Image (cartoon, rainbow, N blue to C red):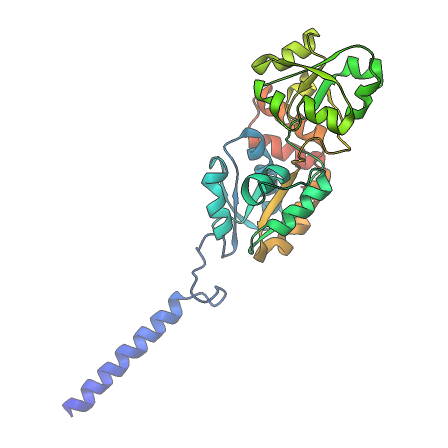
Length: 303
């Protein structure tokens, strides 16, 4: 009798443990993972660099996905690539706004010879490790450029870097001191476009010197808000003097297809001028990333 009672109690205990195990597991969660695991459950984790322009783009992704019914967790202002890439590659972060050329060169292929937007994007798609997918890239970029004033461009009919060859007189390129030795400095301009450019190490006063006319061409990043506020014109670079760095969403492969229908239209709508305008709202108008993102999405008909 005592033995039978002991067996009954043991059976009851085992049944309780089994039921407890069933109650605590989620039938929708993959084996060995809980629903709260970053990057593996229903919540999409979006990251951003500690850079106002990058955070604005991440906020646009976040609001659009939430509007489409996705659960989102924001992990913004993480830092630079050495801080966030391990989390992105491990799947702890599901979505991150990146820049095609700089990501390709700095993270995966330092010796890449790709330069134009399409070539860089194709090389990046091939270089990404298993588990990461590049969604459609944007025309907007954040990279070095040869920039002139709008008045100078109009006077000389300038649209591309190649057009500088038709300008009479000496042209001086201004930028940080190291630009003189960079592949996209005067030597690169000579090799690729046949230009003879003098060089001035203008450093932090590059835009001011351009406006003053002491230089005629300036190395300015394509997303710099001063392009709008100071009426500047980045010249097109059809021959790929510069490594193209277009805005490109990098997503965890297991959700890439699911979110592409939300994120790809954002990339299609984000233009170079549009990104500059967003940055102006941040720097000049001191608007919050949340308000900037909401206004842009509504303007584009994406909310």
